Image 1 (cartoon, helix red, strand yellow):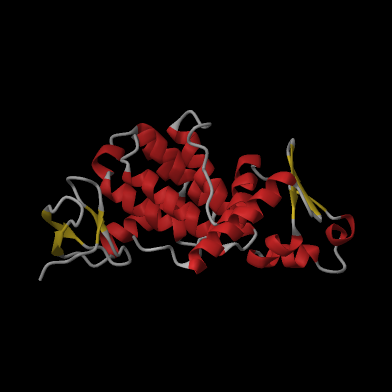
Image 2 (tube, one colour):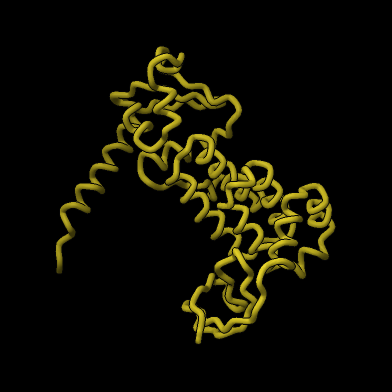
Length: 245
């Protein structure tokens, strides 16, 4: 039996120690307040992954003097997820505490928006992965509709992270979605989404390609749309990028 690489053991122990310090508040030199929740954190840890916190904790800002940052306009659950992600390179988006799929999508989008606001690449990456997994689970039309609207209302047009996933999912489920009244109303309200979807469907390069799903070994033909690099397997919904010659 091979022993674990000591560097991996050290990294695991280090992250565990950081998370323990977060939970105990030991050696904390910065307080983050959001809603009714208070988090005792450490400047050196928060600043390591967030340029926003570097500026906030630097000289000249009131936060650097008071040692307290109030996030009055942010979602407390998303703020907790952000802090957890910084301390342990992962977070829970609250599936056990969030009762509906619509609210779970809301949590994912809120976390991604915080990653954008505080310029935390890791948080955006984790939230994007969770959002993509949620979309691959083939959500019901009303859940996907509300998720798409929130994605477009909380992200800039230049930030394609969640928007491209929303477009791919909407195209995949378009036959069901176009029969849904709420989806049609959302398309009228959210002009950017309608334009993006139309562009992907009508302007993008369309040609049939042969795909092989690595998950269920299904082989199928699909149109590959310009700008959308992958497609979903019609049998298992796994994302595929293996093109057969």
